[in-house]
Image (cartoon, rainbow, N blue to C red; front, side, top):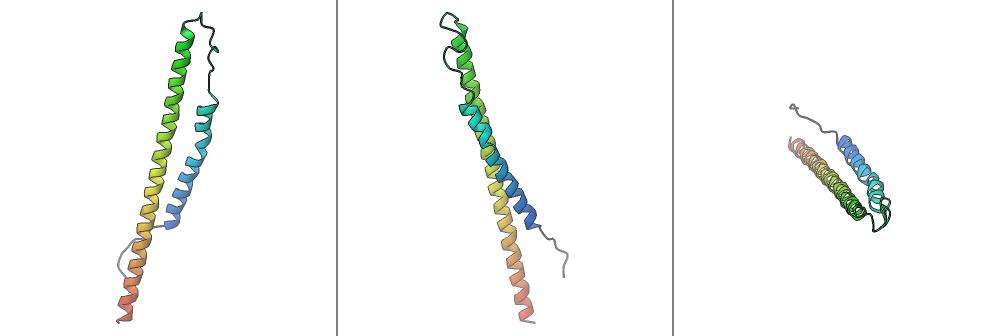
Length: 109
């Protein structure tokens, strides 16, 4: 037998599982950012307070930015999870090809 290596596919499975859990867990902050941080018109003061609309508009902009950041992080984690799953499949496929090759070699001996 030659010096080879063995990839722990269960470790890759665990990484994929944990990444998916992180993405699932980010649903709550995203929902909170979207629905639980609204500032209604007039909350900072009435129309006599000129800065009230500016504060509300700025808040809405920051709120949208936070939602966008969460989306970007989720997308990045989903991509990493997908790439990890592909690597896992590639290793598994290679292991099967190698195993089949060894079986064929021993059949001819």
